[in-house]
Amino acid sequence: MSTGEPHNTTDVVIVGAGLAGLYMLHAVRGIGLTGRVFEAGSGVGGTWFWNRYPGARCDVPSLEYSFGFDEALQQEWEWTERYPTQPEILRYIEHVADRFELRDGITFDTRVEAAHYDEAATAWTVTTDAGESITARFVVMATGCLSAANVPNIEGRDDFEGEIYHTGHWPHEGVDFTGKRVAVIGTGSSGVQSIPVIANEADHVTVLQRTPAYAVPAHNQPLDPEEVGRIKADYADWRAVARQTTTGFGGYLRSDDLTGALEVDELDRRQTYEERWAHGGLTFLGAFTDLMFSMDANDTAADFVRGKITEIVEDPAIAARLSPDTVIGCKRMCVDTGYYATFNRENVDLVDVNATPIERFTPNGVQIAGDVRAVDSVVFATGFDAMTGALDRIDIRGRGGVPLKEKWAAGPLTYLGVQINGFPNFFTITGPGSPSVLTNMVVSIEQHVEWIRDLLGVMAADGKTEVEATAEAEAEWVDYVNLVASATLFQGCSSWYLGANVPGKPRVFMPLPGFHEYKQQCDQVAANGYDGFVLA
Ligand code: NA7
Image (tube, rainbow, N blue to C red; front, side):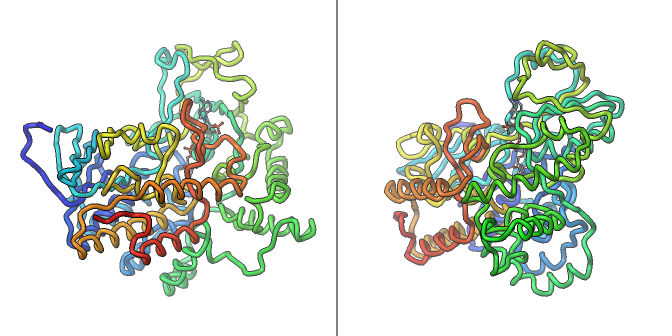
């Protein structure tokens, strides 16, 4: 590849400077390798660099949504609220970059365009949009699961004369909606978080809802210093308990006498749901053991939430429109602050664009069922081409020049979600086939980074230069992921876990349910000398 640039090399190229990329750089440096990170943004943070929409917060509590690999780091960082805001998480990530002196290894404002494997050299050549070409033994994709924005191609979009935003690419200077008529398209987490905040500011908000969301209250509040002190006194153990859960968080709520929802009478069941609702957050779905396995059990939780919507929303017709009839938990539940109550406001209305789809944009608004709703601004809260989108947008070629896109034409194939047969020395952090988006991402990121680091360390010690998942191990793993997912209710709706939100994307359930078991499997693979991999 000729770029006119001097020939560059490093041991590991890392793509992305979010939580995964930063920790990966720190980890490779820790075992004496060199690393170079390329980041499209002008700063660190990944997801939290881009998603600056009003009300953006993490749906995992701050004390859990943070790194546990360094005792001093977890002791010194002071979170202020139960659920961290985007600015606070970004400050934390910046602190991590500074504390571990990582910035000198990162090239910002630079997008990786291609990564090609050279079999003879046992090395990857990575090229960027800045025209740089760099050779590395290993490539680690820390590109994030929710980083490639999904912007629906609605007719007439370019004719609209107002402003258009996507929650995942929010302007850094912020947006002032005062006096504006705003349409928000999408009611996933980003819509659910931003709609109440935008409604406070804007003249009028029209919510264009295709599928209603199940939202549990956040009950966000300032952290109690005494509680923080108690957790920090025992932080390592507290985190270890989280790693024993299926989601990588909420371990402190686990109780040994958890039962199935249908094993208790209605009164007890209702009381349990009330307690979880009062506690707030995603652990609502941990109330019983069978909520994601039995439709009858799932119905009891769904009914409870529908009852809450009816209590909160004053207009019964709007409450009915806001009430989902799908499997609860099949899409990640939203954690909200005043979402349903927002529909009691005079300046907010709700349009069911499933019943009456958006026909087109006009210069001054959105046309639905022949009527144009005049708006000044449109917010796309329409999510992401999840898990594979960021990888698809890079020209990745493995053995024999085979493009990853071609290999994954019918859906992603990986072994353990970290490696792909035909793509030696190439790793995906929280890739498809691993628990990733079904978990606390920081816990999954730490587990993957440490597993990859240990593998690279073993290779260095044994003088190995190439590692590749075997075709058999990959095929067995893909079957296993399908088997595990099909025993759950996760496949019961058109979610982005299945790729269903992106027209033309193959419908394959991409993440693997069950963090704790997965971690044990990864540890076992390592203990067995990296079963299913060929180390050459
Ligand atoms: P999500 O959860 O994918 O939500 C996107 C929303 O946008 C969802 O309600 C979609 O409806 C809707 N959508 C997508 N395309 C369209 C079109 N063409 N027309 C109308 N509505 C549409 O993304 P978020 O950013 O909210 O959250 C992503 C994750 O971030 C979340 O799970 C948390 O983990 C954090 P649909 O449901 O597809 O019918």
